Length: 501
Image (cartoon, rainbow, N blue to C red; front, side, top):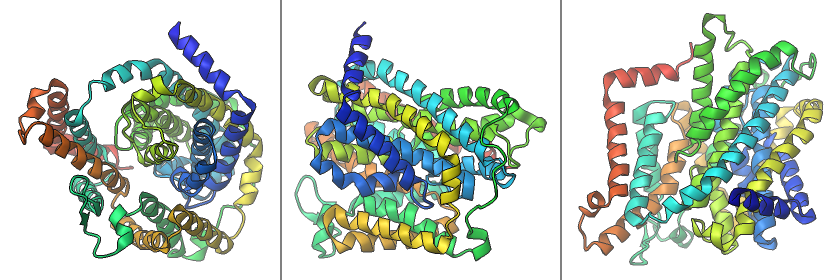
């Protein structure tokens, strides 16, 4: 009964006229910007993050949540229409979605993505409402030792579950950890690796790295191709709604993808990304020789998109209950909460129940708004993307530069974004995943802080990690993951799982 009363409080908060307007505005803005090639939920929220200064905490976070959903859907739209994923988890959606678009079936592909996302979002919201309170009780048992152990497991899990080379994933995480050390020491207050540059004493801006690696590098990559290969899709659409056969094939894939994404989304280190890859692999294996994956199979759109959105919803669980970002977007959400003076963690539920449950209720409302907004506008998105790329990429660059500059009113953030864009282009050429780098950059300073706190509290005794049951269990799980990935048979199967036939 307590759950229903909490949900009633959440819907009462989310259904106020002000919060509804901000949810609607966030969904519209997120979709409009997320549909542009090279921009996804990460860059979209980063650019609009300064707007939260002028809002109260609840409408601000509801608006950012709407932006998150809208930009995610926009990412799948660009992946389907022009084979440019707006986010990393839309990569597998592009495989069959773009093939369907080339066949003139962009409408059914976009509809399958939208309906699958709505179903997965609803299920993910129910899971958050049901399991967030028990996880909050567990969160009270977490101290510095447990937080450090959890972050170690998250980094090792990201290596094990990365879709590329293990060695490259380790290298990217280490690079992210090193970049995270450019800041001021949390204990002594001494600047580290700033090389005399005053702006670097607060560290490299996370938004600059993320926008450069994902936004600028995608533009550079597109411009490096011949003009005919980067031209936006302009083919006429043959029907804008899935057929009965499409529905018959898509709904089981959406259910399976939702289940997988709901579980994997809780994992630190990009669970939504892993979920989309795993869902596509599962659907391909279940279809067997009868499948047309890679040639325009609607199951290759419905499954990964449902897994992606379910994982995105459940990724709020560690952020809300533990104060730990499970991915880069959650890190920005934590930043937004900090801007409004709210400390992310288990105390949010008790100290700000209207914010906590209002945000959860707004997730369902935001997903409903996305379906209402986007399904009738499929034709408009296709027309929008007929703009020649030579006109589109300067606008994208302009949005990115404005967003970077307004964060700190500093040119250094813009320069850093350009440098990271060039680095991201090199990483793409070397086939190095950039998501592990961001994860290392986010978790690195937090790991160091909790490690040093643990050692200070225990007078430098490393054995305290083994004396605390929860910390010891997390470290044991990390060791098990390390042993598993080192086994030849597991390594071969892992490589085969992410290789397309």
